[in-house]
Length: 405
Ligand code: 7TS
Picture (cartoon, rainbow, N blue to C red):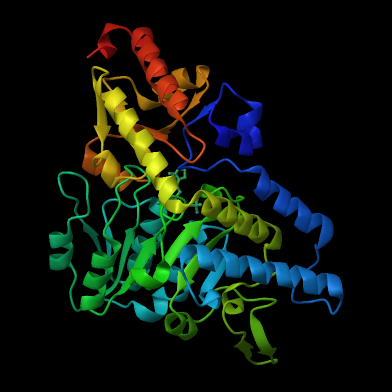
């Protein structure tokens, strides 16, 4: 068992468990759980409101968590990091708060064929509501975003280009800087879904060139219920708030209201301090390992897994080579349905994801309705790869000759 497994109470308590669904959500290290408990046991109060010391301490912990997470994602201006429930809420924030004021009839929104529904449907719905054209950029034969096609597709009416940093279904890493340049070349905003990047790579928002960047804490050792939207200050300041209530106002008159400064303008209501504290502890945990080491560890396991899986007759791996992807391996095995495969693997304590991975447009482009997906993280090890391969072999025997090739 890898030493790092011991940092994760759930994994330490279940030695036979091979958790290969970290792209869906990661396990949580003890230090994150401890940080949250410490906050609730010592400093819990509603921040920004009480004139007493305990509330000031809660406010300070929330502020410190934002500074810590901002440093992790590489944004120098921490007020440009809005805490949200996660990536989905962050992307919907942009679609709701920026969209209607900036997209009109005849305009275009361009996305890629690789997207998670969270970075597809909000833009599709915005385009439908505003009478704009919704354009899906095709992929190359090796499942990368086709940059030449993207250059051809964008034009003077393009208002926004949305793309993922790393694909959740294939692990493909996109060329974010080039995609942002293509968007900016026609005066469009570049929106990047970083849900599968922030947990695995050193991101550095300030050097990426995008206008908005979204991520989820629960995929990076943090708790569920917290994530973020990073935006450029000028763009965020020009946007109207999308939710109204406490904390986000400056003055409220009977006939009109004015808005608080960033980040509060986009954080209506009582903030999620406990989870922000947990997310900051997750950043400490990952930085102590080092993000280069995190990626190298995952890519080593992906290389090993793809080599071993290649030896299984009838197994097909989707997506780019190991050195061009994060810790995700998507595959199908002959005519065993991925859901049946996942059920057999579960009997062996191997947790994988099966289905369309919230990327139905991508599945259509791959010509499948579903794949099986194994995803690795800091606590995964060679024993997990062994268990995966062994269990797939067992499934093939169970499903008989039809599954053999
Ligand atoms: N974007 C990408 C690329 C994702 O992988 C996910 C979640 C989301 C957006 C949505 O994140 P949320 O935290 O707001 O839900 N992806 C997955 C997955 O691959 N399996 O389960 C959830």
